[in-house]
Amino acid sequence: MRQKMLLVAAAFFGALAFILMYQQIKREKEKALRGSVVVSLPVAMASADPTTLGVRIQSVCRGFPEQGVAFAKAYLALPAIPSVVVESGLKDKDVVLRKIATDNGTYFAVINRGFALAGKDLALGCFPRDGKMVDLVSGEELDNVSGSVRIKLEPMSLRAFLIK
Image (cartoon, rainbow, N blue to C red; front, side, top):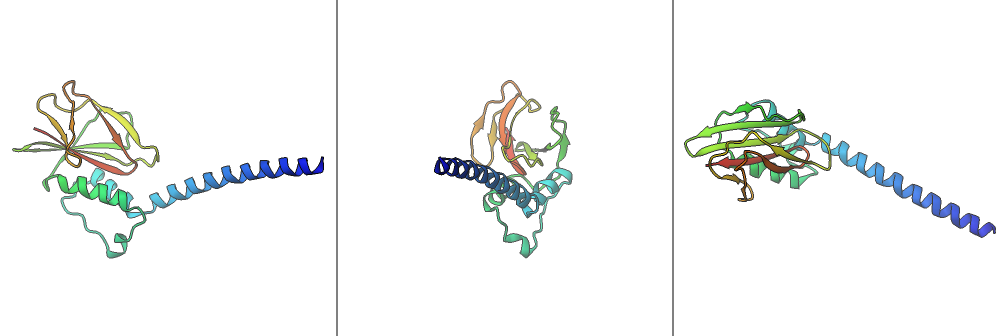
């Protein structure tokens, strides 16, 4: 009887330790993401109009290379000319939309300043209906006939699109 009680107690505390460890890892990941240089780049893109981004040498050694590479690809796909903030019609104030009109077409930068690890799946209804819409990083053509496009935004991310 005593052995059964000890076994049940060990199983209970083992499960509790697993749950607490999972929560601690999730909190540490969120805290590390908030403190990294990956955060400063989308915030700079959303709040200002950076045509040049300078990075300190210390900041190059970041703990999230995938996010840094994804941001760099999207940032470098956009032309280095001034942009304007466009009203996206979203209730989520963490998402900022910038528009760059050129002779080649209209470029859009969609910036997510949110920290939610799950990311966001948004329906943006503020894009022009004429022309084809292309994701500048993946090359994927998106359906914008209705003017509303569903896109997935990772936390602290930038997506670049072109409508020709």
